[in-house]
Each structure stands twice: as C-alpha cells, then as structure tokens.
Image (cartoon, rainbow, N blue to C red; front, side, top):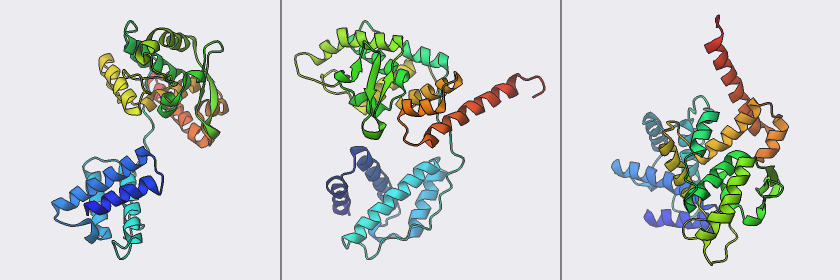
Length: 294
C-alpha cells in the first residue's frame, strides 16, 4: 500500500507537474484517510464508497469544515482514479454521488484599522530582521498582493522613486502604488537590512531569510504569527488576512470595484465582489447597533 502511495506522489510531481503545495495537500488528505482505515483494520484497496462517505462525515463531526471535507473528497477521487488506471484497483470508486454539506460560506477574516496599525507597529526596526519584517508587512497591506507574489518579488520589481511595485505574472501581473510609510519601510530595508542579511552572495530576491536566500511562504507565515501573538490580537491572522483587509478598507473609503479588481489581480470581478458583501454586512451591523429603533 505504501508503495502505491509513493508511486502516486511521484506521478503527481513528474507527470501532472503539480505544485509542491498541491502535492502536499493531496498526500496529507490521503495519509489521513489511510490512518483512519488502519484504525478500522481496513486496506485502502478494499474500501467501498460508503467508507469514504463515513470518513468524511466523521471528520466534519469533529469540527472540520465542509470545504476541508470537499478537498479531501477531491484528493481521494484523484487517488482512486490513478490506482484504477495502473491496475491496482479493478475500478475507481463511485464517489460522485457523495454529497458534502458545505454549510454557509464564511466570509474572510478582516482586521480593523486599529488592529492593522497595532500589528504593523510590532517589528523592532533597529534589528535587521525586524526592519525586513516591517517592510514585508507594510508592503503586503499597502498593495493587497498575495503572499506568493510577495515572496516572488525581486529587487528590480521595486521603483522607490515612483513608489510602485510590479507584482504577479501573466494575466495577474500589475503595477501597484505604495503608500509613503510602506515606501519608507522598504527603502530602510534595502539600505540597512538587506545588505546585512544577503552578505557577499549574489541574490536577486527582494526579501531574504537569515541565510540570505529567498524568503519562503512558511517563513513569512511564522513571522506573521509571531507578531500577532506579540500584538495580542485574538483574531486568526494569515498572510491573506492583510489582503482581505486591504480590499475592505479601500471599499469602505470609496474605492471603485473595477479599480480594486485591477489592484488585487483578480481575473474575474466576482472574486472582488465578495468584499462588497463584507462592507454591506458591516454597515448593517453598525446600523443595528447604533440606530435607536433598530
């Protein structure tokens, strides 16, 4: 069984050219299902569609979201199709009939203006790492870019004179303006901190770790978590939280939806429209709280 799982992982990488994040997600879902089967003393090659349905119901009963269950189902579907294609199973499991209750779609978490200011004030800019962290967080909130776009930035993507950053690629590529505080933080990092972190090695990456190599998603995630705890902010903060906050705060201050779409690099405006719903909900909440007859 382990040989089959390893072969599937190799198939995802070599033949499907799946990203490392996709491979990691698929394999985690499959191994969790295998662990569940092991406790039931069953093999993954002997399961029926009812076993998959029972497993998904169980993880939802333990508090996993409908979205997580749906992703697990997709991972298992792909695995069983692969197993059938190489003859490890007679036929792929019939999983199309499994229905998952996704529940009400949760809107993204957003920070208040005060929480953003508190978070951005945490890094100690007298320290090389703190100076870098300040620049990264300021830039993320200034531009609303994705964390993958942030860590993919090279030094030549930044124009301090025009206070702009070129981010994304292909249809998502765009040039985004940067507010003065973020531009200053970026200039300080480039002048004081980055040369210390990079040392004598050649490096094009804008943001680097203590080894002088390009910052990773996981590395930035840990940095953000550290400052969340330090700031005492109880909301769950991810790199995408600053992107969501950027969008909502711009709309609250009168930004045009089409302009926001361009700034965020959304190919479909429906992705941007969810933020108008968030602003509308906030207005309704304030109305119900403040109107004497509400």
